[in-house]
Length: 432
Image 1: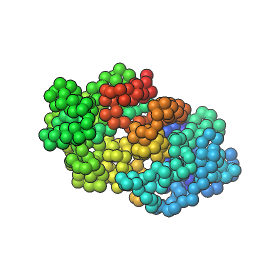
Image 2 (image 1 turned 90 degrees about the vertical axis):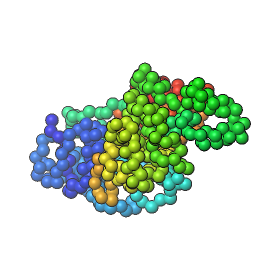
Image 3 (image 1 turned 60 degrees about the horizontal axis):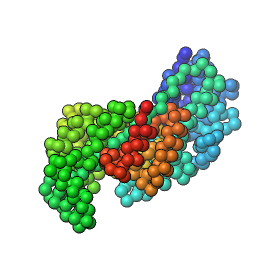
Image 4 (image 1 turned 120 degrees about the vertical axis):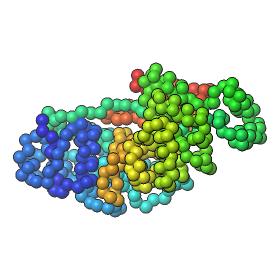
């Protein structure tokens, strides 16, 4: 069958970007574009008319919002309305085949258009989830772009029942953030001394005993859970990757030195069982020279190019840090989520390419969003956490989505308090 042909009065980078994402990357359909009406009329295969007015016949028509034909950033008035079991915005017209321009709406969310607009950041310099359109309109817990793609496919198949498509399979991916690889080991005399003093001052005698056993090599460091992750990954088919920090010690970045032999050995060992990425330090988020140095350090340890990264503490300054990663030829970044609330920051559960609104260009940097961060669940009970994970899992299964969860390595420390997390990891976050 021929490609799905898309007519528009003008072809723009925005239009090409979002149609390729929804039609090709999410639905597996080959597509082509034209601005010529005779070529559109002559096309014998499936086709879509996308523009401010229709062709006047039974062609699949979507009344376009002006967003995909604009350049630059303006404050757009958005009215979110119910649409079956979900929502939509950028309403179309009665003669349109869809009640909303899902392509313009998807572009608004994927490009993080609202994060280019003036906004107040939180104390750590993060874009607050509460300011987002998804939060204020109560659809943050839905991967609306993925849902819209399914609804678009259903409508298209009513007109072209033989259209070729291939839906993505549901998948689960776990991100292991490593702010501290060791709790006690390899921290040097001064840090160990002050650690003992702090524990003694707070009457934490069990911590003193644990620290002593680790330093005397009588037991394993509690934060070193990577052997357990590797064993579970193999036994239960868990898909995970680890992000190690190799920045300099500071108030915000307090891992041990990347020069420490034990730390370097740990990173190399972890890389034998799962992909390893760079946890970008707080300083490197605003210092390109430091970011380049941290990338070089990790590559020297693993003897592999750094292909993926995540930002410390959920800080994602769009577009600056993403442009820096493009310049350093890092393939993927896993920071598209909120560290203080569950939800879909970009309206999707699936990877997408960073579109730079200032330069109106799709970049080669893939953004892999996470929907649940462990740090966003601290006020929930174990029952509420389990229910939330199951609800997200069920919803994403229906649209061929991807459940991506962000946790820390110390989550799986062998203790009574962490039994729940180990059970959740092995029973709910596997492909078995």
